[in-house]
Image: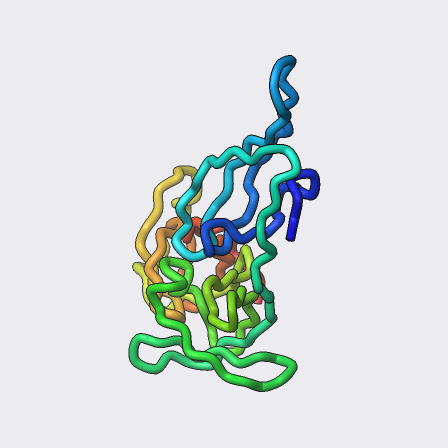
Length: 187
């Protein structure tokens, strides 16, 4: 159990039988009345943000969460198969659970998987991933002065906008949080 004095940003707590992470907190000691803690917490399963207030000394549960480094193996139907790098156990996670960043997964890529009560609830990809361009319009010489972009398809099937000077076969770095082009990588 955690007390309100243990609160800090990033602490994982159990609230209403759900795992949450503390995004923001503030201890308040009014001139009159008892002290309390104002918080913003984010549900680790749904992503919903709540703003509960806790009385000073109130206790909250410690969730049964565990973070593991796992390796992405392959896609099977609507599930992604991941393998624990230490025990070699395999887990299937629905694609919808990862959402938009799932389109940047490459075979053998290592990701961080958060488990709650033995069930995978969240997958964190590296912030940047290097992907090879498999299809795009040919680049035009001298088209680097403007900020114009064109559509390109990567080796994972993701479609992103890239600058006009990027050609098929180039390797680029992509931000997995936003899905945007970052830079060209010398391969």
